[in-house]
Image (cartoon, rainbow over all chains, first blue to last red; front, side, top):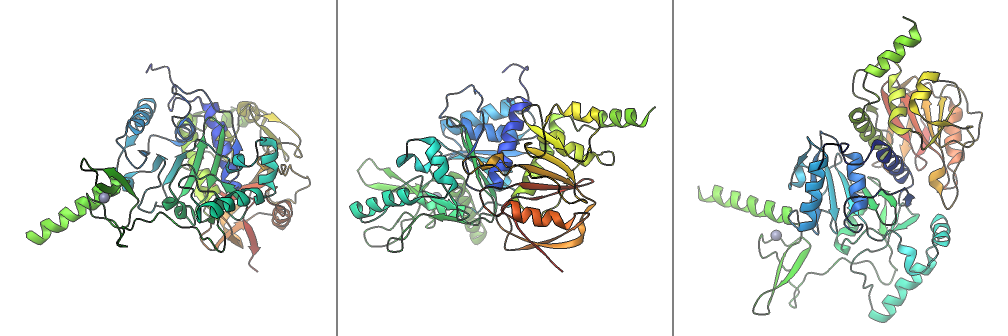
Length: 292
Length: 193
Ligand SMILES: [Zn+2]
C-alpha cells in the first residue's frame, strides 16, 4: 500500500458522510439510512459496508477484532483485518473479545455479552426484509415508514402452514423499537435475542445496497412471531433430548457448528472460536489449580 | 493582534480541523446519540466556545447544509466549515441558541426518508446542573435523569411536538462549552418539577 492513502483509506469527506448516516441511523432505530458507498479495493460482498463503517469509526486508540462466521482465522477475517491494519497505522488488533473496542463481524454476534463501551459492526448482504414481498424500493420505503408489515407476516405464516414452524435459519426479521423491521444480517436465530436490550451499540452496513442502520443499546428488538407459533432459537438437543456439548471445550450453552467425521458420525463445536478458546483455557487453569 | 485574528489563529492551532481530533470527537458524539442523557466532555485543549466549533467541524462539510439562526459563527469559521447555508426550514443542520424559544419550523423529514429531518445543535449554558429532566426511550436503560441550564422550556415542547409522529422528527444535540448531550427524536422528556 502506498503512503499516499489517508488513515483509514477513505478520505475525510467519505468518513463524514458515513458518520452523519450513523447518527441518523441511531436516532431512527432500524431505519435504513442511504449513503453513497465508495469504491473499495475489494469486491462488494466482501463486507465493504461493514468495512466503511469500521474505517469511519476507527482511531489510533482502538483495538479491533474481526470475526467471520465466529472465527478470527478464516480467510475473509484475515483479509479484512490485514487491510484495516495496513490502512490504519497505530491501531491494535486482537482475537479476544474482552480486549476489543471495535468488533466487525459477519454472520455471528459473540457468545459473551458485549460491554457498553464496545461497538459491534455487522456486515449485511441484503438490508431490506421487505424485498421478498415488494420489488419496488419506493413502495418498500413507504411500507417501512408506516410500519406496514402485514404482507411480510403473511409470508411468514405461509411458512408455518407449510412446515409447521418458521424455517428461517438466518436473517430472521426483527422489529426494532416497535416500528422498523430489520434484516439482522445472516446471523443465526440463536443470536437474534442479543439484539434486544443490547448493552452495546450495534451498527449494520450494506455496501452494495448503500445502507446503514442501527440498533442502539437498551432498545427493544423483537423477532416477528405469532401467538400460536412463538420464536425459537436453534435446538441443539440429540435424539435423547440431551443438550449437545462442544467436542472441544465442553460448553453446552453455545451455538454449535456441525462437522462430519470420516466415519460419517457428527461432531459439534462452538462456532465462536474465541469463546471456545477462553472456555478451554479457563478449564485448563482450573485443572492446573486442582492438581497443584 | 485583533481579537478575531487571534481567535482564528488559535482555532487553527487547536487541532479541531485535524482528522484524528474529529475522529475522537465523533466517537463521543456517537456515544451521546446512542445513550441520551450521557454527558460527553470533548477532549483536548480548546478556547472557550471551541467545543461548539469542534462539534460543527466534526459533523459538517460541503456535502451538507447549515442554518446559523442566531449568527453564532464568525464568517471565518463558516467559510472554514465549507458548509452551504440554508434557511432553518430547509437546512439539514440548524445551529441556534438554546436560551431563546424556537422561531422556525425545521424539516421533519418524510415518511420515506425520515433521515432528512433536521439535526438541531443547541448552544446552552451548562449540562449537569439546572432544570432536571427525566429521559426514557432507546439508548436509556430504563430511565435516567439529567439537568440542563440555559435551555428555554419551549425547546422541550418543540421536541415533543416535532417528534410526535415517528419516524418523522428532529434530533437535538446540546452543547455547553466542552460538554455535549443528545436528545434524538425517540427520547421522551419529562420535566421534574
Ligand atoms: Zn467450544
